[in-house]
Amino acid sequence: MSASHRAGSLPTATLLEAALGANGAPAGTDHQIPDIVIRRLPIYVRTLNALREQDVGSVSSEELASTIGVSAAQIRRDLSYFGKFGKQGKGYDTEYLAASIGTILRLDRLWPVALAGVGKLGLAIANYQGFAPSSFKIAALFDGSPRHIGDIVNGLEILPNELIADVVQREGIKIGIISVRAPYAQEVAERMIEGGIEAILNYAPVILRVPANVTVREVDPVSALQSMTYYLQ
Amino acid sequence: MSASHRAGSLPTATLLEAALGANGAPAGTDHQIPDIVIRRLPIYVRTLNALREQDVGSVSSEELASTIGVSAAQIRRDLSYFGKFGKQGKGYDTEYLAASIGTILRLDRLWPVALAGVGKLGLAIANYQGFAPSSFKIAALFDGSPRHIGDIVNGLEILPNELIADVVQREGIKIGIISVRAPYAQEVAERMIEGGIEAILNYAPVILRVPANVTVREVDPVSALQSMTYYLQ
DNA sequence: TAGATTGTTAATCGATTAACAATC
DNA sequence: TAGATTGTTAATCGATTAACAATC
Image (cartoon, rainbow over all chains, first blue to last red; front, side, top):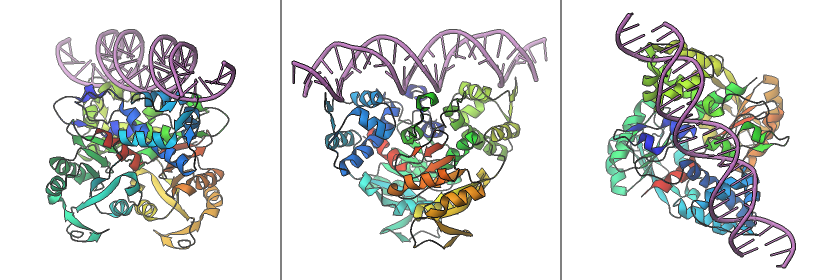
């Protein structure tokens, strides 16, 4: 499932791809770096930051690999796509490598995020404290139900879905999170994309059809559970 | 990253594997069927059920594939691991195929699930209505904070983490969901495994070390966001 | 320097796709 | 029957690993 495979002129489905490890990267642009590599980088950053907090100043690829549970060769190979970050005989400076990968991923800034759907899940997302330290900030809230419009959550007013495109465009938001129910997900995605959003985190159990320049990643706990039962007894 | 690669006697890390599409299946047992195939099956079931609801009685692999956004060859290949489910010249009976895959995945029963961590996210999970129709039922709630112990959520009393192993064992629960904060996740996982749990859905941003017979799948929205920013502008 | 570990290439492994005979 | 589509094999593609020269 290479990018070129879905580089047609029509919107292409991305649910399975994103959910299952195939390429969820935007098609069209020919990315020389495999999306699977890009998706590993955040874990490297997280692990390096954890090491830094334990005052570990440097690690070898072998140590980092065993901490994460991958092979050392894979880590070195992944990093080699972007440059040279280590010292032979020594390993990697944890702070320098974390910062370097952070820059590659553009985590050296705070990204405003639009969140659509403020049901129980959406509220949990809106209130989640883990986004800010991770370079994301919920900057706009939307919902389809009149019941919630106008409510204030975390200092943000809940706006109607009809305003998604306008607000997202005005505020220059590039990232959207969808936590509406399945039947509304496609419509909401389209409003977001109309406003200029190019990255969507989708919690709705639905296949989003998006243009080739938009990246979609699925959060699909039900499917995850349903695949694990295969291995039970 | 085949199963055999991690079939050593020591617990093996699974975060990256599960999060990123490598094999999150239990090692040891030599599974002839690739985990990547198993992880696609729930999407097939979901899509087939959606078609059934639209009164579509049969589909070709080509139609199903274009609905999901994968190749028809992949669907036929995936199904061929388990048997013959279609009719040449005709396609697949949606009801029959959905039921067949459901049986393969053991979705033809209701699985009790233990949930540890009843913060905002945990409560959203506990109250989520999408599990029951998907063959799962939250059957026990646990939390580490005395503040929540004894509270009733959805008819279930929140019990202390110390009781996880006992209760899980007594009730024969095989599936656990972890939504505690990062520092407590490993400890909670160990209690679950002690009680006999063999499948863990992990929302904590932490690498769980588990024995080879335990399957882990990660739900990691922050990493998903952090990988998408790579493609922005 | 000697030892350790990186960065990189080639070999291996595994998953996807193309193609088509079988057959409904 | 003729047309359509499955089930399956072989070819292709891509990702991971092993190995080692470079070098700190």
